[in-house]
Length: 327
Ligand SMILES: Nc1ncnc2c1ncn2[C@@H]1O[C@H](COP(=O)(O)OP(=O)(O)O)[C@@H](O)[C@H]1O
Ligand SMILES: [Mg+2]
Image (cartoon, rainbow, N blue to C red; front, side):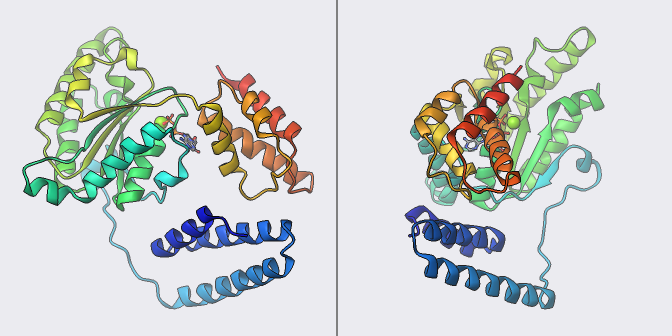
């Protein structure tokens, strides 16, 4: 029978008009029903999905409504890339502490007018720190998905090398956009501003950029969310920390979280024979991203071998191969 999580996912997908995901979850429920001996129900569900898909395809060719999208234009176009993520916080496997803190950001954002009317500012400048593949970029997507805001990504490395000598001026443009167009602005791979990384002539430029960034960040009192993400906390100037409303630390997954990441990625396969304790043990030291990739590998291996049943051995092997690929 459908699990509570699946019913919630169905309602969310419906509310968001995310048909593709809606049908995927429905098919997942059908597959589960079939496995647990509810063959008739599974068959009916599959027929319903097929019929609904065919009908909505026919309807889509009639009414195609244009959607207003914020697109960076002119000079800004080379500085920012925009996406419209559908990711949600529920898609992430998070420690309780991190989950609660992100939830708090969303709640303050949703009630920001109420907070402002009483003279308080909502949390909106966040610094995300932690090893690669632990969900920092995904968090920015999930926050924009939750709030229905566009995600503007600024790649600082690119900005500095491309506009050597005029990066600070470009940063001003970015902060003007932050003030003018409400969105989630992600300064990804923030490491570029870490003072030790550049060498020779770069150092002066990076210092200058860092200083202007701090100034702009300090002055910014907009309605946008500004997120910095970095893998190397050691390289970052401590002065940065104070300018953010909150510093969020990401870590490699605990065994429980690791199992959660794997189960989510393998949701459409039959994993009833998997020994999760053993899989979690084999996943030690791997990031969320590593686990996701390993599961994709194992799932594809199974499918290419003409089965939707995943064995512990196959998963453990894929996890081992991932570990061997780590630097
Ligand atoms: N907490 C998480 N829960 C579920 N999947 C995750 C999580 N963190 C990372 N992933 C998976 O790994 C991928 C890469 O993660 P990403 O957010 O880019 O890591 P980072 O920015 O910290 O290097 C994501 O797209 C997602 O598939
Ligand atoms: Mg990232």
